[in-house]
Structure formats: structure tokens, C-alpha cells
Length: 410
Image (cartoon, rainbow, N blue to C red):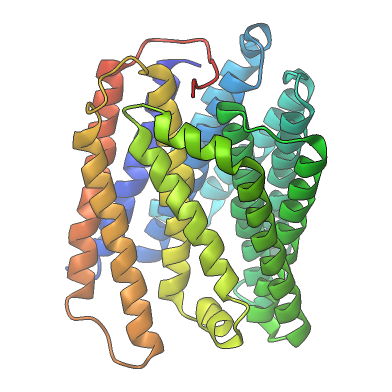
């Protein structure tokens, strides 16, 4: 995995953050030249497909393929063609929204992801049964999630754009991206990095609990769409199973995990801690949705939805990628070298999340809205691109050109 590839993925992250800042600025100043909905599509596509997808693409390529397999020209072609598709979306969406060029580049990205799945499925190291199963599950969810995109195309072609089926198709894609592909890719990396001791019987229980919970919790989308009581109960069952799975994981690895966390030293450790805390908060939030009034609040208040999406994208998946990239490529750096990047990222992420959820609480309780909410969100959002830019600079200065991936020493 080349340093230049990581920097390109980080540049996508920076651009997505700047796009997000512009979206915040719309509510503070009158920006007549900016089409909000188009920029929102550009921001979400670049963040999800240009940063998170390529970030996990690079980690899978570097950690789960042998040096011989990883050096195949197909992976270099896949990276650059995928980046071309991302650049196309980066330009097309803000200018035209969903139209010819943006749809072409989005479709190209999906087709390239299919080829990536096919190649990794054939080429990955077949050494550990647990890691192999998790990796294949992540790749399967990646393909499954795209069925929602193709369904959107069919629905729009039949004149149903903007209707309830259209929204369900979009939510299908997002659900199995966040709760399928990205989640299982993250779990696979964690297992590879820290090698917790799981017996096969314990692993099998945790795996099936986690897998079934992520499938069942899609019922929350159906509850939002149709207010079906049975969908609420299925989601509640999925949430309960997920909580039991988390407890099973903690019981299985409590000693080795705690020892690893306290003894492990890395300049990027604060990003690892953030990902761990947010992962627990994520399960906690979802567990609260077994309460009917909270389930309704979560699916009908947009500010809570935005807050939860950013909680996952920034605090969980992005934080772990930021930890992994720096830890692997700049492991010899001094412990405090990343502080100038960590603090702006923490302030931007934690501050904006607290403000979003406080605003949601005010609206939910019918207390009105927070004073200067949009101004506060804009100011706090300024810290995110700043932190990302400083991280890129420090990564470039501290890292090696190219390294062979090795397990993290704990």
C-alpha cells in the first residue's frame, strides 16, 4: 500500500469536510451560487465512496493480501479508476445533482467495487478461518447494499422518484453500507490488528448474533416508512441481539482487550480510543430504540438522523482508519506528534455532535430551537477540515513511502 494512495484518500476526506462546511455556511449566509441539495449529494458521495470506501479498500489490500497478490496490476488499475469515478462525482454532483454524468460515475464506482470484491475473494490470504469469514461477510454486504442503488434507478425510471419506495431503497443502501460492509470490514481489521483470543465456538456465537442483528434492524426503516408494529418488534429483537453480542464479546476478550488498550502505545491511540467509545455509544443508542417513543423520535427527527450518521462516519469508521494509517506507516513517530491534528478533530466532531443532539432534544421536547445553532455548527465544522489537513501534513512528514503491513504489537 503506497503512501500516495493514502494521501489521495485523505484528500477526498478533506474535500468532503469542506463540502460539509459549505452546507453549514448556507444557514449562516445567503450563498445564492450554491445549490444545497446538489452539494449535499456531492458531500455524501465523496465522504462515503471517496473516503470510507477507498480507505477500507486500501486496508484490505494491504492487510489481507500477500505481497505477491497485492502487487498485481489489477489493484493499481482499480484504485485509479475508482478515484477517477470519485473525482467525477465530486465535480458532477455539486453542478448538476442526479443527472447524466453523476449517475455514470456512481454506476462506474459500483461496477468497480464488484470487481474489487471478486479479486479480493480469490486473492486474500486463507490463513485464519475467523478473519476469512468476517472479510467475506463484509464483501457480501458491500454487494448486497448496492441492490438499493439499482432499485432507486428502477423506481425513478417508473416515475416513483421521491416516493416511499424510493426512500426505502436509499435507506436499504445506507443501512447495509453502515451496518454491513463498513461494520464487518472494521471488525475484520480489529481482529487482524489485535488478535483477541476467541475459541471457534465463542466466535461462532458472536458472529451469528452480530450478523442477524444487523439484518433485523433494517426493520426500523420499514417502521419509519409504514408504521408497522411488527417491524418495530423485529427491530427491537435485532437491537436486543446486538446488545447480547456485545456482552458476549466483552466477556470473551475482557482480559486481553483491556491489557492491550492500556499497554499499547501509538501516536494515533486517541483515534483508537475515540472509535472504541463511539462504538459503545452506537450500540447504546440503538439499544434505546426498544422504547417506542424513542424509536419514533429517532426516525422522524432529521437532526438525530444526521447526528447518528456522522457519529458512525466520523467517530467510528473514520477514527479507526486515521488510527490504522498513521499507526502502520508512522509507527516510529513520537507519541505526541499527532496532537495538532487530534485536538481540532476532537473539537469539531464532539462539539458538533453535542450541538446536533441538543438541538434534537429541544425540538423533540418542543422547547424551540437553540440560539445560534447554525452559527455554532459552522464554527465547530471549521475544525474538522483543519484537523484533517494537519493530519495529512503530519502523515506525509512522518510516514514512509511504502511499507509491508504487519500486525500491531500489543
